[in-house]
Image (cartoon, rainbow, N blue to C red; front, side):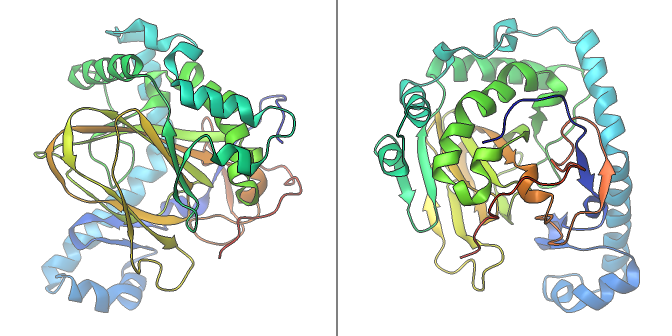
Length: 350
């Protein structure tokens, strides 16, 4: 397993500014290096999805150029937002900024984590303490937070949303939500959740995906509502592993659906649908294709934690599927380091 040590400098891969740019209007992720490359690589599929006129294409071109510029500025602008929020924002629930305590966590989650650190713990024993949604796809579920903690966190998130503070959105696919590191919740909430509880669980559940070597994360909350984002297109995560917790509120619809790993042929054949349950978390591999069906009514807020293991991703960037071209970044960056990776099996692709 990974052990704590001196703080390290994390990086991103240069592909962040050219790969996997999401075009919501046409429901497609694209690689973008310029107009000629875009026409050559995506012309037919774009036309089939409605990008047919010169005006359509020029509009798309402008949007992609703006997105590349936004990504280039992202780290610096995010750091500036975090500093302003830290100095000027007044929380509604200061208690959620305290260091994570066991009382905030569901008894089932505590029991599974405690078992995972016990002598002789193995996968078979752990599986008796959580729900196996799909053994074939390695998708699991268990309660994570107590209802009172979910309610307190939601109250704080809504208060922040209603404030005049600047807000960085989670990604290009979600227009509503909060980046937890900008709000100041990384250190007290997400880091101890990863280090104390998730890593021992993931080490048993996903030993071939770096589960025992998790050393960084990206955490954000996404919001779905009928008059805002209602669904999420099919994608895979920039992470080795993912935790997705439904925080609330009352809602219908919006089920997650899962295909196969993104590298596999026919990865979306016979997708598996999984209903969200408030307070419960779904664990899956980051490379698993997935999305969210349309929300029918109510609001759904989800905490998503992308869990990263530099020992795995230093070898192969999951977004461009090449050895990463490293660029220094703020905070955890995208989880890459300049260190030689520790020996660890990469995630099996079948």
